[in-house]
Image (cartoon, rainbow, N blue to C red; front, side, top):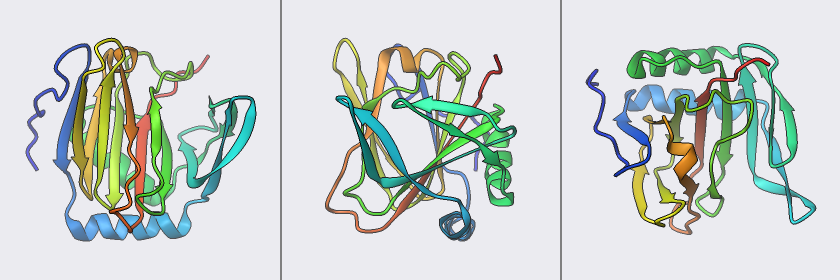
Length: 198
């Protein structure tokens, strides 16, 4: 893997670097299996139009401290790092030159599970801080949409790959994981981020 920072993926109003694959296939598969089997996965909950819904997608929240994290009007308390998560954290900190103290994990069982347009602007997050997205398992399309111009850009996230969003990206761009019936394998996504203490 090159230590060079990739070109900015966004045309304006933000910074997204796609590093591509940052670990070999054997390590990526080993980490996928470890996380799939041993992370304390739970179905995600969200409040939409006043109703609490349970998603097929599963989530988990881990960090350096028992940080609380609130999104979609539900609050989670972080569990302590596992060895596998620390391995990934060290690898991406070395690759990106950034540091992180928390990680939100998502488990998508098939391509039919996705994520709607949103931004990561929760009050606990370091403003304009880096968010590192690591993909393990099935390759999936990831899309950005500018809030004002509606311009879209897309990238395919490969097994063992790293994408980093930072600067004012969350102010101006939404992102999503579009559902697809063409993908039948599971994918684990890890988003490493920095929580600021009050």
